[in-house]
Image 1 (tube, rainbow, N blue to C red):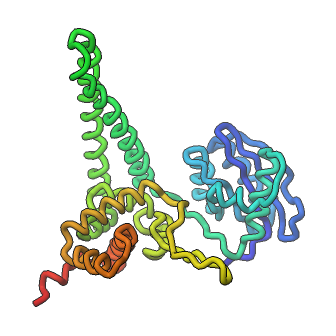
Image 2 (image 1 turned 135 degrees about the vertical axis):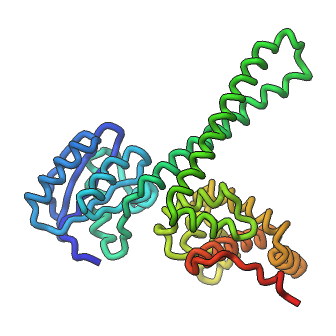
Length: 333
């Protein structure tokens, strides 16, 4: 861990960035500044900081989706160390607060960096192909939801006269045809990106060798883990996905069972649930495990969650070994 002596907090919004910097004594070093949220302005500002300040710098800002992309790309290009922080983590670290302003938020982010300097994890720049895959996958989800909404139009067919709904149904069919065509193009592009990048393609093949893990789950895992560079082990990813159980006890009065936390990537959790159901149905080893635990009196959802964790463990095992999954039960006598 570097011995930073300038902690810069940045509050990110759509059109501007509020910036403040403090030193190790929590003294104000950089007075509050406001710059436009575009690459040229950000680069100009930090070039000046690097020139004027003979200090070891770390920059922190909330992960606000596309709004935080320009500063992340610029800092990565300039070699400035930074970390993107979850909004919830920042808000909970503030304690009791009254009122809110972008200026105060920037200072509080800087103070968070100072107080957590020994355990913060630096962010790494996302490669272009992973960024494109994330954008395509998000767009794919929107199209799928749109298709589901428009397909509901056909539920009226049996209840309304044809002459009333014919124009609507004709329009709906045209829209669905267009959406389906675009969905196909996006899925083809996702596969093309994977095939154009040998390391991603290798990991994709390894992940899909695990029984129960399908193509879409594999793609989402590649995006979420930044091709398995953002998480060091299966437990970390399980925590992120909301499938890792945590103890619930305190003193002698509270001694509840371990349970998962609601803070999770709900999309990944949903995908893992579908994978667990598939593995329980088609993977002989998982099926035996499920039946054994249920016969012992274990709750079915608890056992299913265990299977989710086992699947993540298998995924990380094949990635770490760089060898496809081998179903040893096939060779058992």
